[in-house]
Amino acid sequence: TRKLTIRERVGRMETSAFRDLRAQMLASRSTLVKAFQKRDKDLTGMDWNDALE
Image 1 (cartoon, rainbow, N blue to C red):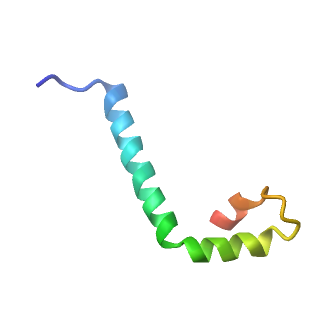
Image 2 (image 1 turned 45 degrees about the vertical axis):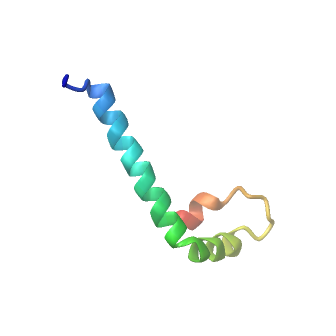
C-alpha cells in the first residue's frame, strides 16, 4: 500500500468530521428546530447560524 498524501489524509479527516457533525445535528434535530424558530421570527431563513451556537 502506498502512503497517503497530506491532501488525502485531510480529506478523510474532513469527511469523518462532517459525518460526525451530521449525526450530532440529526440527534438534536428537534432542539435545533425549536431554537431556529425562536430566533427566526420573520421566517427569513437567515438566522440559522445563531441557533447552532
